[in-house]
Length: 511
Image (cartoon, rainbow, N blue to C red; front, side):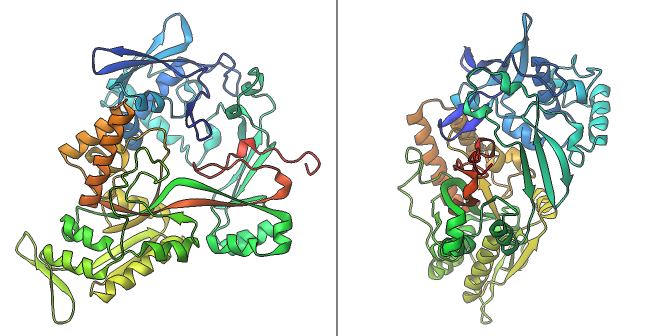
């Protein structure tokens, strides 16, 4: 399945249609899929239920770094192939929520013939893949030895494009397959459109350099363009003649995450106090030039059905921060530093660090503003811009105190397990937040089918996060795209990366 903002739901991609659902007792369901008859791998072999079963087993394979996939799709307990149709299968799922039905098809299918040619995992149930069985361990070793993150060309795909050239850190080129199964689908729906003959992604770290490449025609489209560059291009008559400027309200937000495993950030009053040091309106103006909007939490204000509008928007108030710090037991000393006695009996001083991905202007602006605001009330803040892969490891190890990062979502399913469930601590749950009651609430939201009941649960969830403050949402982004007019109509989207590249069909004259 594939998320579609235009349809407001998940839509079939490899699947022929939206799956059928059969309820079992009051806590399980079968979600039955039929794969498209045209769907084949690059070698012409059909994509079968056995490939889906293989993928689920890889996701649960002991020894592979698939914890995030397990957190997202842990509700899928098993798969039952149809004995009469190799393209038909049923997923046995915990819960009976329509959100689980939608999410059940939201993962890429791997080719068994290429990654496990001897079918060594076929006889092993999905539930046993987490056990240290000899076949499982042997497969994990072979899989890791393939180094697929460095050699993606070793994994054949089922999509319309194939990897032609890849220079890590510089560029990636995909070429349209001459014979792709999607071309055989009668009256192919938009999700199977693949118009560009070649897609070349250029990695240009410096925004000014990327803008220059766009103006020279070296690149055709610049997504997620910084607000100041976007505005500068719009003010130029010559650039307006050559370029089109597009925006879309996104489901991506900038968040500040507080590591609750740090002794300084264990209590919620301290975390609440720190949120009052972020000047959200000023940040939106300075870093986004108004192309963003504040939110009380992880639900976008544009999703009015589920947004908790009874909560006040984040406010900037150093005085309120001081009052909350005092309630948390902190005392300001004559030198303006803040100290208190820790649970261990030792004195501790409120000195913090804020980590973020290096080279991202909006993160840098936010960190500097927070540092300056904290300094006015006597809290030293160390800035820690960090390379992306190193930062990811630090988050998993809990080696950070405050983390700035963007979080992306979509409005069709609400499962906060990967980011705020206790079982995801050390994976993507940077704050270490989670309790039996919050875990139950997160699970209930994901499993609830009734929109009215889901709305009540989501409002309760937003209230909980607002009070506990494992993270605070600063604002939701508005995606900005500058593109060459010769591309014709560029379909924009609130989903990452803000546009649908396969649906771009350059004007025939320009092409």
